[in-house]
Length: 305
Image (cartoon, rainbow, N blue to C red):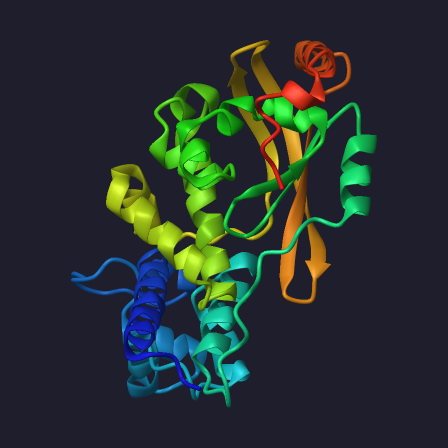
């Protein structure tokens, strides 16, 4: 079954805006093309991308208008190279192409699944790092005690009360407290929107994801701004600066790993840890100690699953 007309229109607009945005970021000099005279557009022209990709201008123009369904993988790869897409952006473009191709029936709707007990056992065995599992919509679905303690501002947020499950995107864009919790709030906002953008490419028929994006677009000017940039992020690691209400400033390294939990759902396992011997490690240990004193039955942050 082909996508509904409104979904086809949204998909074409997504392809158009993504390719246009990437094209605007590359200068002729970066692409090794000669330049002369005044240019009316930022970045490359369509005909220049076509030359770099080895296709006709008409063909590339049609592609940039969202007509990607009949395009071969070789052409998609050539366009990705011409636009100098990074690995995440390339994966996203291929996801868009895959979603646009006709199918005999629409892919089955992705179902939310519980985290298997062995995964929770794994999380609980991690005692020196904050560990949590989230799905592609940025719902936190499981965590160890330190993970719950570290993310207590998220778990205690009114955005969690309203929806029943903590969601990092809702917290970041709809809870004013997020700007205190995330020291580099702008970076957190950009990364979160980019993760949602990548998930939308992987799961274009996920109604809950579309509803979340629509909600954030309606209620958050910050989200509308970063969403319009069409940034994409799949791999998630680096340094995070947090200001925790119980222990103060924390500088933590983090890394996310794919965690398949069913044939139709891939979550990620994220771990935060501190440099050995640092002040942040001392504060993380203090937070772990505070978390251990909480009675599980009365822990207000135990709202996962």
